[in-house]
Length: 251
Image 1 (cartoon, rainbow, N blue to C red):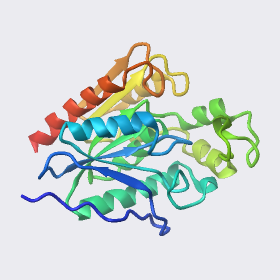
Image 2 (image 1 turned 135 degrees about the horizontal axis):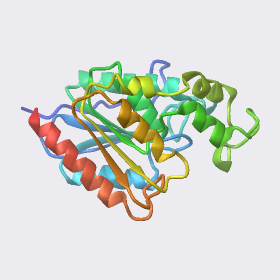
Image 3 (image 1 turned 30 degrees about the vertical axis):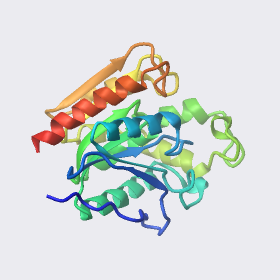
């Protein structure tokens, strides 16, 4: 069987082109990892690049992308929120499955929340991985940005990334993705460092407690922070890669 052809463009429902990089794994493999970043991030964060390249070296196809309004993707950052990113993911999954790929979604931080919401209702996502994923979105919003003025405050003090009212409203309105976690039916791997001071490890523990899928695994990383420092990225690459290869090969 020939390998599916990766789409030349990825476009969301608003017609905005999403920036992406495709990493070719083994020839003739139809599974693909879609790697989604977190809030204020882009696909080019160094640990995400290292992960994508590591999985490709293991023979796994990977596409990393920036959500609309982030990085070099089209769109306005002020319109970015979980709800829009879920719609972006829906479009990405649609393009990949149309091309013949079987999708494994791997999401970091806010990208983890996006993945849980989409996988809970989208059977086209056949495997799910959450890396330090946010679960309790309202609590995260209040803790990370509650002291900022929407329209003025900079998210994590990053130049040009102004907190929008729409972003806060979306996080507060969603409240939590814990109910979505209970609806995930596909194999699911969660990894989280116990030194994470951005997203508490309790978020992943709560998701695990509500998970109903028969194939769920949680890996706690002692002494590791939100971006898998110090030195945990190779371990994440090996753990996720082995988990994916085992399940992909089951068919």
